[in-house]
Image (cartoon, rainbow, N blue to C red; front, side):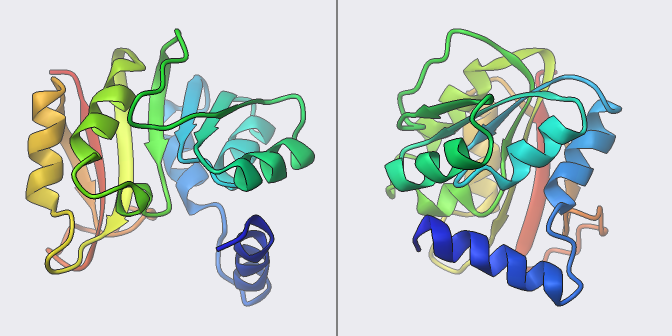
Amino acid sequence: MSGRDYDARWERLAAEGHNPHGEADFVDALLGGDGRVLDAGCGTGRVAIDLARRGFAVAGVDIDSEMISGARAKAPKLGWHQMDLMVFDLGETFDAVVMAGNVLLFTAPGTEAAVVARCAAHLSPGGALVAGFQLRGGGYSLSQYDADCAAAGLALSERYSTWERGAWDGGDYAVSVHSRP
């Protein structure tokens, strides 16, 4: 999906009455309205830009040059980095690292553990790794994600079925918060 198509999809959903900022709402509530956030797999910057509008210090990382170009065009003063999540190193840490929009389903199969480890390495003490993604049979599983987080030194602290904090029901979508114990 191109950056323009991605943005158009969210504009369409907003016009239909859907909240395009559920992920930012979630992070805002999690951090109490203040902090540093890394949007890992930021795409065209939808989540990072909304968090910046709310006063958060944000940065975004994405491997796709078109997506990063779109983010830069919309918010040129924010820190956008075209890098591979499997190996990136920004040399700084964040209160939260957010992987919204099925990021782990777009990484190459077999690289998920490395992506989780790199994101965990960018957490400040007490920071949280937040990820939401669809659970599909035969795909990257929630149990594997939890194991990859544990291998990166993180423990599950919260899990929901939606970004609006719907109770975890074992369904086909999960939003998980992992932090250092």
